[in-house]
Image (cartoon, rainbow, N blue to C red):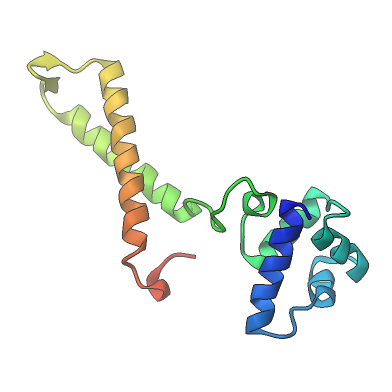
Length: 144
């Protein structure tokens, strides 16, 4: 069985443990294929077209990268709202740095390359902080 098939079966079994209606037939109806076709996807004997993989990802609430085995994370690293927040934070940081008179490092003026390097480092810090803070935010308050 290939990674896609294993993950489909695992995801469906997990959902079936919560609600018995999540059979192969039920999932097949949700994504608009025959049960035998969906069974072939789970068994790895048939590969679904990308449009169908997108539908399957939506049904299970995971990314297509997860289904294909490109990542072990079921959710995208950052939601679109989080990406917008990060971009806003980075723009504010850049404006703050550029508005400083005589921005320097060890007494030397900060070059454009050094500023870009600093911004990349700051972006990494902001992203890591967002990831870490997710662990401490109750699920009901997290962005979906």
